Image (cartoon, rainbow over all chains, first blue to last red; front, side):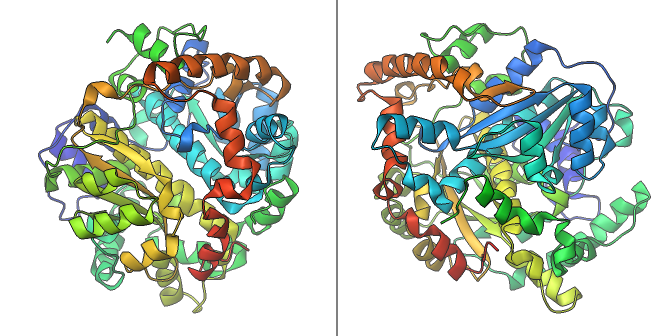
Length: 272
Length: 272
């Protein structure tokens, strides 16, 4: 696909985006990202998994602390149980590989208490959890993009946080290890049926020198139209802003994740 | 560079890593990642910035909520002030572009209260903050990799969290917008002097079906040796586990970030 078309798909036909004259194979792969929720049963080979984890480990990690781990789930029974825990999303059972990405303070706590004074008090703070959340996201994004570069499809699954303690039990996670999100990986089925989803105009997310909320307003309205055109083509109900409001307007929008703080505390993440 | 050499640099000469027979341009770029903390003054052109933000926006975002924004800082005075706030790290003032990545619940709160019942109560929960932290990290990793694919160097800067409220004031952030990390971008100076840093053996971070801590032990010892060889070559003091223990052993290791929870609360992130 021509560069200009890749950019235009990303911002939608309704947007007034002016594609820049900058290009690379990496950017082409990134712009072409789409979520895949329908998979063929072909297994993901061991060599491919090794390459995905090498990609993940090549991402930056704060202070080289490497505060994450990942569980590769291939067992069909376990995938089915995890699919059930994550909002009955059948594609988790269908995909041959489900990677569960973990914020891992257990390894660092172990190292610290073995070498140090017997405590790891800094690990109780929000900062430690945030380091791990950011580290694991950087890593997983590299893995996802690498998978796409091999012709595989992926989708991130935040719904493992609906019942995080049950997920932790299923994966036998010790204290100080927490499941942040999942990632399904596999050969895409019906490739032609998934589309690149348009994003907000750059003017709504990119600020120069200082942040401003009011100038975002017209761009939010433009986006509502752009996305409504996209939804109409996909046969989906319209209304991006309505979806956002549904997620944040009431506690019910959290779908059980209002208990996340308590689940983190029980798992050793004090968030002091 | 041959694929096998790229993998081997990533895991270090001391590791027993067996490179897989899987390859792509994207993976090559990822494996070659190194932090760049020395920059030439050449500005980053507008077209390049547009491409970096398009890469960032192409990353997955939970429920298409897009809970992040970014401030592009080019002003020399502002970069100098931010460098001072972020642990006196001069390369922030030196790099022509400093991107400050923001967890942004202000846009979603605005949409929700305008459209809904006037409240956005779900945004007070840890889950909302976590969505934003993960979203912004996925986006920034895409931008960083795209920058590297254009021949630019980058490094993530977590130290903006040493004084997050001062950073917020500098960027005029409204409530419900929080600076998570920075990213310097520019033409690398002395390219040959930075090296690919070896990571933990895959066996320490990749688990199959269930998580296990004790089997990681021998791989942590291997890594200590691998990294000591790397540090020796770079003329740096040895001891990865000692560095980890220094970070987590005492509150002093947090370098002021023990106040992060309070700074988040003041900024509207209740973390309920």
